[in-house]
Structure formats: structure tokens, C-alpha cells
Image (cartoon, rainbow, N blue to C red; front, side, top):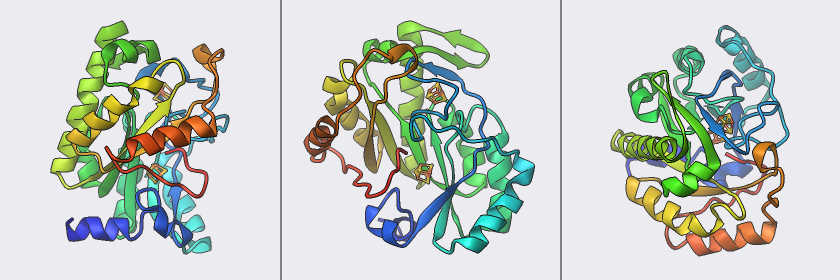
Length: 263
Ligand code: SF4
Ligand code: SF4
């Protein structure tokens, strides 16, 4: 482990639950649009991959972030991480880089973190590095394009729509390439996987193996909440979630949040 990674793990509560007693993170709701369509997504709320289901944030224009960060940091000394995780996809437009550039210039010592669906990760790494991002979360729900096509109805890349298996395959290739390249650059990667009963529940081993091989440090299983096209599927029970984490722990380290964090 590098000295940079040791510093991150000593301060980032999402990558090391042991420090969540002392340190916390602040999110900037600057990312407004998205470049994929998850069948469980209702755009009345924040990105389901990265946020608590049923909660919506009011978007914050990047030009206002410094005032907001200053106000919050002066009231809470425990903040060690500033993240962008929604309300849409952080890498689908320029707002995330614009906001984090402002924050990094003023607060270079604070860890910058981004949570993404991974489609634009590889293409955005130069910019992410230049604004001080050291930790990334990528949501990977399937590594089999047939299962992926049940979860994603469309993927938009370079102004072109991709649907069905073609869309799922493109997204998966971009996610794994992004994780590999982020890791090569010394970033720590967490993978979120939404456990969707009846869709990817029995596929999680394969996801864990593939993301571990690509270089992910830790995996976070996110409980599914029925909504949008998946309204009729059952929610993930605590028992199913705990059982899956237990099963995957030997493959890749699993998160152990002791506070509500879905990213
Ligand atoms: Fe919705 Fe997030 Fe999926 Fe985009 S990546 S469709 S915002 S859940
Ligand atoms: Fe936020 Fe997710 Fe990063 Fe934690 S890992 S700081 S919840 S973006």
C-alpha cells in the first residue's frame, strides 16, 4: 500500500468504516443529467446507484459551491472528503469537474471523491486527476451483458444510443477499463452493486471476481428499492443483503457501514 493510500484510508469513512466515528464527507449536488437509463431509476429522486432511495437533492450550480463548502466546513470539523454523487451522473456533463476544480484550488488537502456509473470514467480520468480526485466509486450491477440488458434500457455514448445487449456490453467494457486505468493511476476504487432480487442476485459472485481482477479495493452491496420499471420486484431484505456480503467477502472486501450510506 502506498503512503497516499494510507492517508486516504485513515480519513475516508466510505473506504474504511473504522474512521467513520471521527470523520465524515460532504456531497455537492452539482451533477444534473445522466447518460444511461437504469430500469430502477425514477428521476424524481437522486441517482439510485449512489444515494438513499426516495431522497431528492436540489441542484447546486458549480459557481456557488465554494460559499456552500465554506459554510459547511466552518460548522463541521469532521469533514475530510468532498464528493459528487448526483443527483444525476457526475461524469455526464462538465459540472462535476468545474465544481471540484474550484474546491481543489481552495482546499487541496481535502480528499475529492466521485461516484459514477462508469460509462465516461476512462475518458474523464485526466480531468479527474487534475482536480485532485483520489477515490472513485463505480456502480457495476452485472458483468454478463444479458443480465445487464435486463437492468439498463439504454446507454448514450458519443451522441449515439445503444440498447439491449449492445448497450450493456458497451457499459461493462467502459466500467472495467475505467476501473483498471483508475487503479493504474493510484486511485482507490470502490464498486457499488445494487442487489436486485430476481435479476442479478445469483450473479454477484461473477461481478465480485471481475471487479476485483480489474483492481477494485472494496465492494458495497446496495439494497434495491422497487420503483420505476422495477416497481413489481421485491425490495432487498436485510437477510439477503447480509448473506450475500458474507458470501462475497472471501472474493473482495465488503463495506460495513455503520451509518446510512448507499454509495
Ligand atoms: Fe438514474 Fe443513476 Fe441510473 Fe442515471 S445512473 S439512470 S441517474 S440510477
Ligand atoms: Fe460520497 Fe460515495 Fe465518495 Fe462516499 S464513496 S464520499 S458516499 S461519493
